[in-house]
View (cartoon, rainbow, N blue to C red):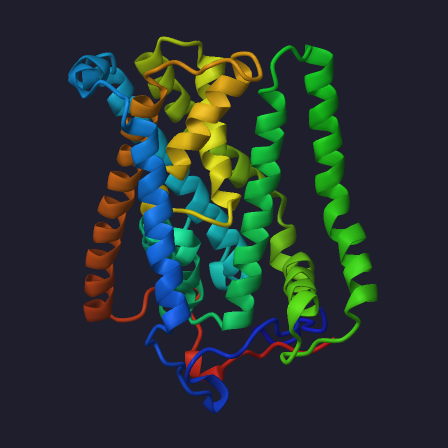
Length: 365
């Protein structure tokens, strides 16, 4: 941390990373409970996917895919790349200190690697298990302590949920332009008041930091750290969040609209429904099944709050979902290649890296 910068607002929110402060790495061997949970998630996810698809006529799949012309495929791929750029830029703003960014807003190669590998882990592992990779990646690539990366991850998920809820509300059928404007105004007011109001409430609930805290106190402590981190207050983080979801949902909406012969608005509702399934406590591997169910539900919802979605909705959702998974795998492969090159070349300039052996220099409140 730069000399002279106040650290009184930072406090630890979790255990130190393995090797920091003399801590020992935890055993990676899964317990019986964890194994059972993993098997259940696979069974639930694959079972849901099978239930969605068992009555589909797979002979029409080539015809359905032929509805997606080259322009839509290329446009969707371009939108995915742009959404990745927004996400990496937000990570650069949230996770890397201003004095370490040296004025740069565009993400460094190290930040790109963290984002791409973390994104692939989220897309491929069940139960959002890929989120657990973020503190390790941030420590390896950027030298960030665990408490800082956990707070950053929580803050980014708060932003994601806030933006997705706004986009879901705007997709509600039958709303006038005035109602849309009112929703946006209320949302902007919530963004402005979130940190000061929620932070004050959390300071009353959890006045002091404690790494031994459990239950709701531990969660409140993590949320407080996320809200009070100075770098999280940068207004461009919200802009990057909006940009990420806008281009990603636009690409998914266009593909769903083309496959299902529905309006762009109906496709948008389906894309939002699929993304909102990320908050479900039970998810299958690579979110297969739950994502497609969310897309189908979103399209049915906007089509008449209960009306049946187009029969092609599941196949359209699967095509879009598989494209997202393929893009994440390709991105992770490129990030891995970049890591090998970086390891051979030495430390990168402007990556915001710290010495992991220094541990977390956070000071409790």
